[in-house]
Amino acid sequence: MSAPAPAALAGIRVVELATVIMAPLAAQLLGDLGADVIRVEGGPDDISRAMDPGPHPELSGVALNLHRNKRSIAIDLSSDSGRDAIAKLLNTADIFITNLRPGPLSRLRLDYDHVAPTRPRLIYVQAQGFRTDDAEQDRPAFDDIIQAETGIPQLIGDIWEEPRFVPAAMADKVAGYTIVQAVLAALFHRERHWSALEKLVQF
Image (cartoon, rainbow, N blue to C red; front, side):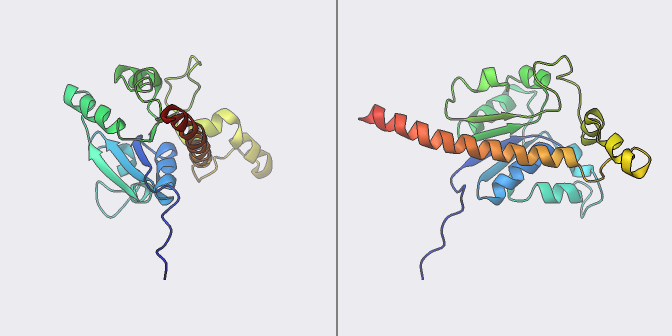
């Protein structure tokens, strides 16, 4: 009997610096495909760990689902040693996924302009509620805020006679799956074009 084929993303490392649902869901799905996902947390007070009841005070049902197929590490990003630690971790990564807002990312020197120049093969994914060229780029954006901004409750109100939210974190989930689609396309592009470039340089 032949050995089972390796998972689709075996050998791919994802570093996740994210909270709540959208970006952690994307990283979890990449983990389902075989990627090595390392979740960077600031401590046990991460909001997704307390979103609903779970088997432990620091592990909600949401976190139990979103953190599967991942390894976690606590890093104090406000310290020099913490920033050094995540820099070294990113040096080993294929993909960096974050949903921190532009302001905090810049202050931590984890924005694209600081991270990407020395890591040309890194796929950098920054996903937040509002565009980075928008005046509201640093505004928090939970799922219900995005649903409200896009008029979904009003559309439901046209059917049920009063506006209602979709009770399933719809915006977060659609965005999470869209992130995965974009990452897989970026990996395919990198594999095709970087491999060709490296062969040319070696020749």
